[in-house]
Image (cartoon, rainbow, N blue to C red; front, top):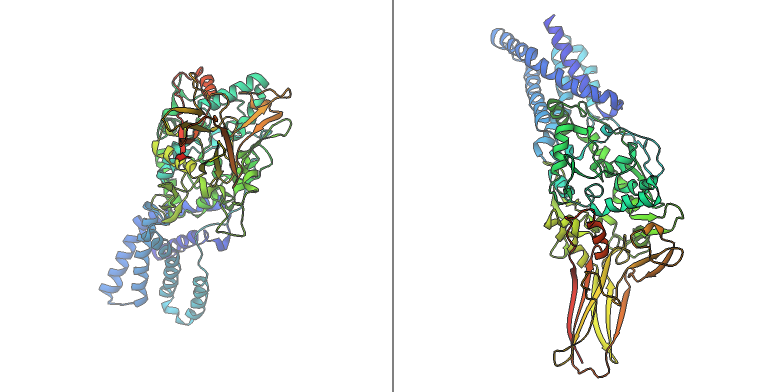
Length: 603
């Protein structure tokens, strides 16, 4: 009876492992049950049954009966390798960057067939005439071992748009804090980024969403939430909530490392909804286009390993071990080819008026018409992530060599999650290193030159690095302008432009590169940018173009002159910050950044 049980248990362990092969294409629901059962059953059988049986079997046949079976010893060695490789996969895992992990995975995979072959060979020793067919069948299996995983199917059950009516529960959204245990560096980058702080902890956004709701009706908030707070929109919430510290509005926009998020997850798990652009938000998008606001499909129906939603520490620990031991389904669930395409970003970085369809933000369309969109020439083609998710060092793109998963395979270009763009200010409140990444990117965008022709000072600004207009995005709220000073040969200031007034706003008559929105009466809309009906002006610089601003000097100017020309940038105008500070008094003024400077003597 004991021998029969041994044979049965070995066969059961083998079958429970083999059915996980892609060859058998079992459903994910079966796979996620079989995987932990295979581990638990194998551990129990090994500890409480097999170890004692093997000891007694060797003692009886080798030491007492003096039987020396070569295939028996091979069987023992194979079994030992299987045990240790299995334990390594369980407790350490196979994340791709650990040689022992990769080796253990392959030993466990191929070794199972070797073990089964020699086991069957060993127990059929008295029936040698039946071995040839057995060997043929075993060889066929050995020719087609496959990675232990079931086939993935693409799911797109949830389409989050401004008109989405389908609701989910907060616990359907896996909290980003859960990702930190295996993606610590990526989590740290994201935790201080503007993507993370794009809703409740962004004071500018909260004022604008609230204002939109008050002016246009509460339902209008959903236009904003589709990109800024899709999780809240999906569970049926009608507005974003302020980040809270107990019963008080917190200053989370100063907080580094997502401490509140980690604390909430530790205390409440997924029950407390994570707002903003989370890991799940981006990594569960299945399709996207640039047709409108939040024009993407997001699925929460992904393949989850056993115990992945467990509320106990032991369950979470075990689920992580299941993922790490065989992470293929996990990787496939969170990474899709569309993530490399610019249309992936376009669904939120192209923005249209929800009622009249007028384009408010056209970043993707600007890129689409630019020389950077050149897929036929890989040396010239640059997608969104090539600029905005590539590490910078000393003012140049310097792909980061490292791992995106702790212990994972080394990559030559880890896509960083700073999401460097233009808003250096808010990310800089939390992380100066992240702010510096954005500032470096901004400084790659333009060239500045000065010349004097017939008493006219000409200052040229060329868009050499941005793959879109300069500036882009919410260009009605971005300030990019020339700060000019001219001194004559006696060092007397004879001309200036682009200085700040006493209230912090840029003086009238300055040369700015921006869009100015007007309403139906051709009056500036101010904060109410959704009232945009007419474009009053657009002085932005398209890709590859050079804009020349001319300043006429007095005829009596004493030459030579000393010219100081600066290209300055401020993420929000002073009047916008003043309005926001009425709600968030602790908010500081965005600093003025000098992107470029030219100092030159002209005759």
